Image 1 (tube, rainbow, N blue to C red):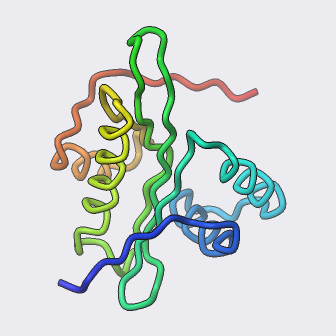
Image 2 (cartoon, rainbow, N blue to C red):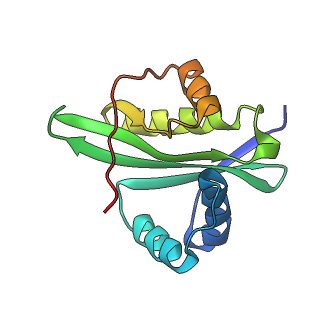
Image 3 (cartoon, rainbow, N blue to C red):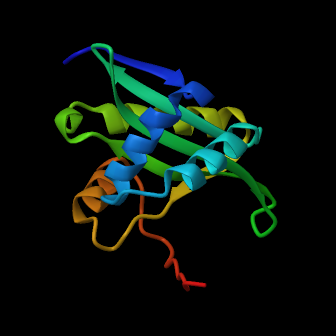
Length: 144
């Protein structure tokens, strides 16, 4: 298995992160809106982005948002994005990114990590179950 390199994402990584997020969404997003939001998120001390590289190529990303939930009276680590490029799937990139996020959340005193994923992403559901996550909630959305 190739050696995986993890590193924090920076402002200079915006085009790489954009490509990864478009892969996640399977859509081309509005780059100026993405870029402005990404730069703002990098300034938020509760938001962290970590990139995964294999042989000099960035192949994965995880976004971790630390939040204090009043209904837990504890910190929670929310994984907002996790994407691995198709050529690197099955190489434990996602597992290592999750382990990184869980370690960061644990070190910050979080009670748990949580995430949501589309009901259409059946492969992702199997992956999260294998990684020890349980389906404990329903998430509801409403377009505005």
